[in-house]
Amino acid sequence: MRRGRVGLVVAVFAASSSVSTVAAQKARTVPALPMVVAQVRVAGGGPAAPAGEGGRLVLVSPAGKARVLTAGFQSAADPEVSFDGRSILFAARKAAGDPWCVFEMKADGADARQVTCGAGGARQPVYLSTVYTITATSVEPWVQVAFVGDDPGERDEAGLDPHASLWSCKMDGSALRRLTFNLSSDRDPVILPDGRMVYAGWLRSPGPQRADRVALLGVNEDGTDYQTYSGGEGLPAKRAPVPTADGLVVFVESDRVGFDGAGRLAAVSQRRPLHTYRSLTGEADGLFRAPSALPDGRVLVAWRPASSEGRFGIYRFDPATGAREKAFEDPAWHSVQAKLVAPRPVPDARSSVVRDDDPEGKLFTIDVGIQAPGRALPKGTAKSVRVVEGVPATADRPVARRLLGEVALADDGSYQVQVPANTPVQLELLDASGAAVRTSAWGWARNHAAQGCVGCHEDPERTPPNRLMKSLSAPAPVLDPPPEKRRTLEVREFVQSIDAGGQP
Image (cartoon, rainbow, N blue to C red; front, side, top):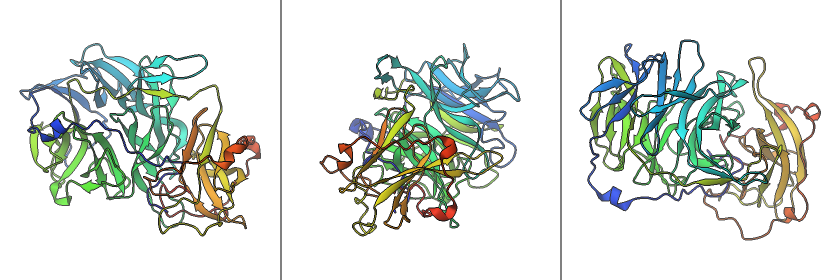
């Protein structure tokens, strides 16, 4: 199994980035422009509240003068500048004890208004490109934001913390939708030039030998086509991705899954993210967090020395050379995130087939026999596929696994099934005796959408074979029994994947 591969993937997530060779060749300079900076108070060592509790946003002028933008809020964090540079999204609490909500204000701090509090709180908002719906009743373009929202009543797969997923809504807070259905938490969304999102997803591997990872995952703005972006290379935990003007995605990585967002920097190419990983900094280079793009290919990033006595300031970092220069620092505050307040390219618009009135979705694989070199099962080993539902953990019980059903594989190794939409599922290949020989990470299908993959743990850049799946010769079997009739599976009834994010 390919470490870091996610179940239910399309063969390639090679972003069609508009890499600017001019940007790559010109001098690394940025005109004097203001920045919006998120800060938390210095309380000795690293940030006392890396999640933004008690934090604020300040507007830093080209001359380095800081003016508070969020004086009316008890806590503020997570700034995001609009594509035209005129507005700022952010997460904030009005008063202690209030939920975190998403707000928007003008770039000078005026006219702050609430966008959404989500279903159970909202953090890390990002502007999305326009989404065009394709339904029988609507072709309306949606202007949306995405954010990280707590899922009421749910805990993460380890049972440690409230569960968080990616959500979206329109700019007036309507059309609230949950986008991701991983049983462990998803965070740090960012939009790519082609209109898709990359985010940090916790992939939890079952079994006594833990192989947990936080991988960079990709998804469309409507929650479809969930797939690995960069998973197995480098350190086990990746967070805070950002696409650069030079065609990279720069991110922070750490050797601890539970890290607070500070670590080393690494990068992949937007064109071949699964095969171009490279480390940008080492352990001796200090701690970095929250990179954001500059128009010349560099990134703004928070940095402090590895010593626990240091405080975070904002620096300009060049991924090509490793050069770092100070942009802003405040002796009384950790400056933990910065965004340039200026226009930026608008990502490509996207279309969506998701229909909220359809409670079902489809899963398919072209040929389960297509697998990574050296990892293939003997021909004919897999006879059927079992689909398992994941029931989210709560404060009172752990994650449960319930059987949705099994289907035989077609002669060409293909299958298709219809399953309940927006439901965490695992796929397991079964041999003739009914024993599981491959298993996947949690995936899902969105309403009215089909989610598929080429094979099982296949090379992530494998081109699909140009043939019609034999499983399409008949309607997809419906695996959606009433919840009370879904049998709970014991641990001994499934293979324990050693690959966090492996697909069957």
